[in-house]
Length: 197
Image (cartoon, rainbow, N blue to C red; front, top):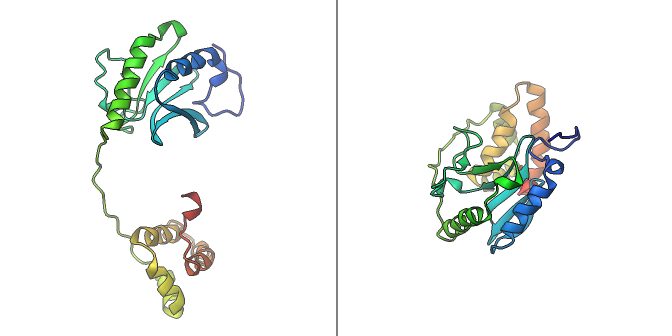
């Protein structure tokens, strides 16, 4: 199928697979999952947790299972889209509506729902990363006790975000401008990435 050149992301070739994706939607509608839109795509959730998603790509359309690693996959239809990168997510790819076995797709979705209800997750060990206090920022804290006190009120995680923001740049003047930018945030108890949470 030819895909038109547009500004749509490469994973969202929905216009090439409209009928096929509508068919997948009609199958998923027979389950208890709720349709939402996330990352510009169609995602189905159970109690606000992602279970499956659908989308069109250049050469195929797909249903993906966010915790697909737990599926038995007796028919061996699932693939890891990024081997070595993706730990949990698995895709089931189709190139034609005729390839979609509704009963089998429903079986896989129901198993994914059951896994979600059972709370099957992979626990990844937390890696403690320490970041050394940049001297340029330490000097600011030394001369401004209010700033130092406000900084210490943040959780270790949020302190690290501020420190990473400063040290990830090489140039001294950029470090200084970043410090000037974050000082009011620190004094107002606003974390570096709070607006994205």
